[in-house]
Length: 633
Image 1 (cartoon, rainbow, N blue to C red):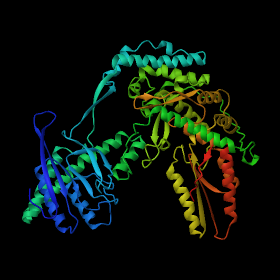
Image 2 (image 1 turned 90 degrees about the vertical axis):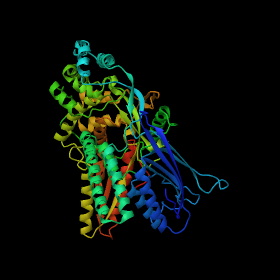
Image 3 (image 1 turned 135 degrees about the horizontal axis):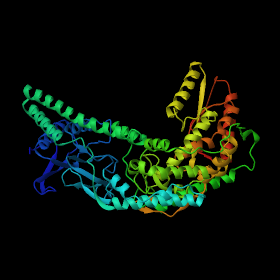
Image 4 (image 1 turned 45 degrees about the vertical axis):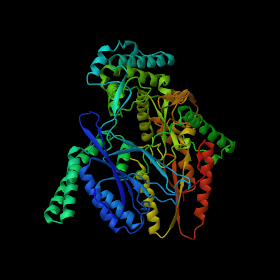
């Protein structure tokens, strides 16, 4: 190592055996102190120091007080220093204040080393005006680290073994005479499937490997990077044109070698998850650096019972508050009824061929309530389709949803990445339902959507939960109307209304009344929906532990197939209420956008908008929906 005038440093090299104990792994620890003052020499010397260091070692950890305000985007030294670190391919981990004056001066820089559990602990002034920084350093090779969990080994031969060990399914293909028989038949099928799976693929303690954060970065690209840095250093030392050309050629080869496997990796991810919008949006956010914070998971102090209690009490409190302000009677102007000539009295049974198509095109999601993995179930369709089809058709004919299909496992999902994960209010409950229950819902949903479409019962300006409609159609329509108004020299006012826990406060009695009197559903079809909404139960499962069981008396399960469609039916009268005031509007699920355009001196439309908002709030309260107090103008 050279001696430097602009900063002080102390280096320590540690060599340890790797996991296989057949070779040695070295780690260089460096402490740095840069005194305040001119920085031109520091940038030159530190660049030379890094170039020399990274060429000769595999892993480096640099810590120290750099006296550089890296938190300041306008500091020339901070900008130049960050560019230097980026050019050398090192990682700087500290992004929070490390000094009592709220500046980030103390840094941790690494190359080839993985750091976790980084924490910054403020100290009293008697100890130091700098904060204590702690972290965990992995000293093993950058390879997969093993951990263990309970799991099953599903292979290409599992399907044949499963079919071979499957008991006689004849009792499951006879039509049940009553709802109790249907419930028993559904439970028996689940028991048979789970017992057979335990025989062919028993639960075992499995070792799983932690994925490398950059799987496209391999030994080849790592070697090319080192060679590129080596040539760069040669050129800086000699200033010879031959080394400059060699350095640029090597850098070009390195970029190409890195780009191809990275592109292939993300192409495979997108192709394998093309039917999973949530994963695709998450992947795009990572590629475009739009993520506000990493997924830190649910904190250890929040357990399943705490979540279950919070979710239950939250809805009870909201409904109690609504009940206190709920009018005893509703104005006739706010009561919207439709005399529907066409009636839907029953759902048609489905044939096995159509059921196979629905199952084949559905997402292979699996939850704790499924007796076997969904991917395996899809492979077993030739052997299992008959009892599955019998249970679904029996449910339709009897107007009863089997009890096992009305149990949900709640998964707490944080609403936004920037919310505090320690607060229960930052999470929403997502219902994980048995896979076959969602297939049953899909069969009913398909027929209900056809009925609504044929009778023009959809809200014209609802873009949520409808084919060929999306947030894009809502945005385009509203933006277009506002731009047209602007071209006419009119001013526009846009009001955005939002609901609090909209899906969770839906009143089942009101929903059934809406299905019957507004849509025209009656007879066995209405009885099926009544069964679907009653006697539902749920519990939270978190970190291997389940909460107590609670009955679902209100709301629609988020994560179900029918939930969004039923919610849009629940909201159908709202459109006619807004139209009575001649106000333009557009909806997406529970979000409602109201907007007016007029001449600057026209106050009449503004008063009509205010009256419309009051009627909307009145109707919402009457239907146990709570509008948030904040409006966006």
